[in-house]
Image 1 (cartoon, rainbow, N blue to C red):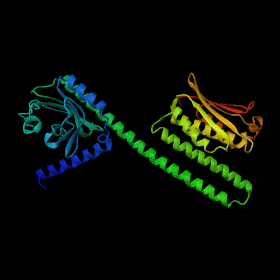
Image 2: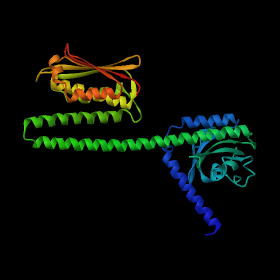
Image 3: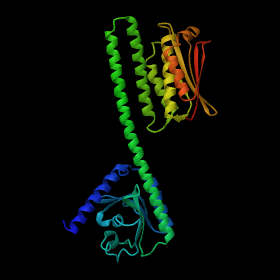
Image 4: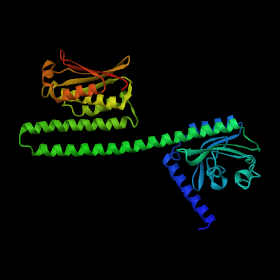
Length: 365
């Protein structure tokens, strides 16, 4: 293979590598370009240029993710000046595009009003793979001073870091969805096995125990589903999350027993939200099992308030009080205490009038 053929092959490989890297960033399908537009505008204004662009250069086209001074967002490779800088240093400057052989026939240069100046800092992922540029363009030949070139170069590095962070977050979200899918499938499988064992059990005591286990698994599945729905990231809005959990739990209550929620707006890390959900789940399950005589009506009230730097979750029923308290010292109570301890919370129980459980917990982990 001669040198020219090797150069063409290498260029194609570089273009394909860039295109794959750009695709992995997820920027081309994202319509939100406001932040990139602001950076393009800042670069243009700082350099006193009429046009600023944040470009991404694939193997057959160039996109302007950020733009100032032009409505054009998509460029053919014959219009791309940024591509000439991808194999060079960190900064490409063309002082007069009309007289430079690389750009003299570029449609942007020969059509009115004509681009005559180009200055672009290369955007490199991981400091090595060039994928585009932060550039300014002008309609007259000129030259940028060293300070303005350095400004564009620093901004381009910040852009690359932002793009890398975005890609890392997307990867984390993909992994989280995969884990969520596997957990959901595992819970469904275990629930099915418990149901089969319950149907085959010989003693009433075993069937009752397996029925309670099945109920707990169903509630945990609901908690898992709502937690995943409430937050794809690290924080969960409890005023959205807990009412959904309450609605799911309400469907498991005996006829005539109602559950109401009054939740203030508090946002907490997801691990705190998960523990609160488990406490709520177990407290409601205990109330459903022990608080009310068979067929008796009743109510369970869930209230969340904030006291300084702590949250206070109160779960109260109007059931049998002391009798319920004595009957409820089992696995559910142990789960409640363990969940509270996990997040540095405390639990108080009051069985004087019905039964009230109060969880106090920090708002940060």
